[in-house]
Image (cartoon, rainbow, N blue to C red):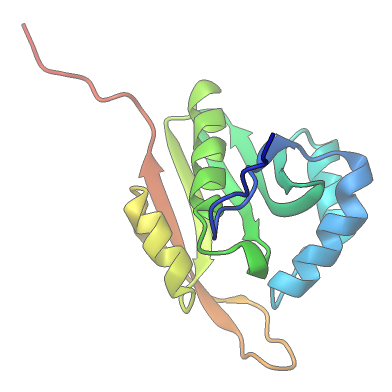
Length: 168
């Protein structure tokens, strides 16, 4: 019997699961590769200890995306959405964002917030396409690094409340 090779350009599926304590060192290492001002392993550990929703996307046993969401009465905040460079432009960031929003909506959040660097055009385009709108700007929010100056953050908001229809 012949084996059919996958079509060119197709990648194996990504399995989504909760972030686990055993993932922390690896995720923190990925975070350092992805972000100019990365979260530390302690930040991720604290998020898990606080009960935040944290998830990873895994392909063939390798974490390729991760995200963190916190919930409060009536609202949620996406704290981290990250995709490793060699897995970008595959829709993983969008899928991860939608999964986090779904968690927030199921938990009863009526709105969701996030912050993003003003220079992060790909993220801004994704968030706009997913219904987020700017509501504020935080001056000099992101710290300077050896290669980047301080940078402003845009605060974005998306309504999660079910739309009510009019009627008598």
